[in-house]
Length: 67
Image (cartoon, rainbow, N blue to C red):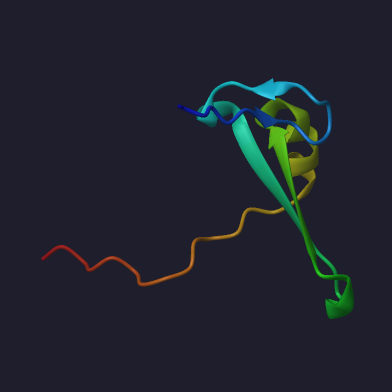
């Protein structure tokens, strides 16, 4: 028997049909006792919220320079 997982937006309750339209919002509190909260949302729902923030560079090793 097969199972199908349906991802639903935590803000609007709408179904997230395509992975390209999905986004995950992570809230980390300064007080570590409150933990971390993650929300699955539609990308269109958080466009205005993302515009107010800043883009963070990916972490990890820098690519080697081509010689």
